[in-house]
Image 1 (cartoon, rainbow, N blue to C red):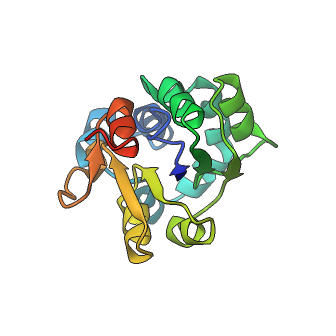
Image 2 (cartoon, rainbow, N blue to C red; image 1 turned 135 degrees about the vertical axis):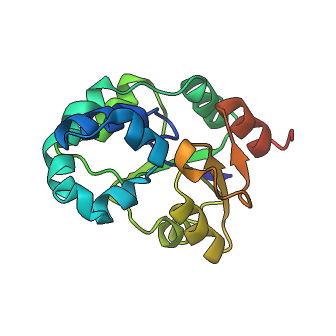
Image 3 (tube, rainbow, N blue to C red; image 1 turned 90 degrees about the vertical axis):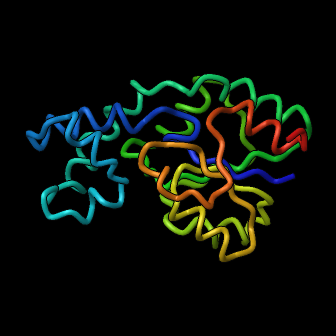
Amino acid sequence: MRIGIDIDDTITDTYLVVLKHIAEYFNRDYNELEAKEYTYDEFFTDSEFAGFEEFVDNNFHKLIPTLKPKEGAIEVINKLKQDGHEIIIVTARNSAKENQNIDFLNAYNIPFDKFYEGIKEKGELSKKENIDILIDDSYKHYKQCEKQNIRAILFDAPYNRKYEECERVTNWNEVYDIVSGNN
């Protein structure tokens, strides 16, 4: 099986780390931002956060080294690879520094066969790459895959819980059970 996997808030716990820095940068209350459950896309389009793209361009690369994989991510992705699955990393994240995202994956021994970054339309890429299943935290990417008749699994996050119709997981063991047919 060809498995597409996102990085931010799928392999890593990114959102709350980034949210802390967003609150500082824009002089906003962290708890208030957390309660709003913004998606990354909403920060880009909300006029209250004019300059968000500049924030990302100037700061995100500094945050990447502070991120850690979610519990079970390394073990499950390695097990999926050992089981013979092809791992394709598909992230909307860009590298501000050359190979920073690949270096992150390698530092944690997260295997992958192909790597794509800066992907805003994951449904089209998943179709092009014949991905059987995409694991992502973004409802937008979930729906893009659905339109391409590609199975997607939504990794649970506070900002995507309002989308109840989605197939979702809350941890990497659940991902393994779905992919291996044990659910």
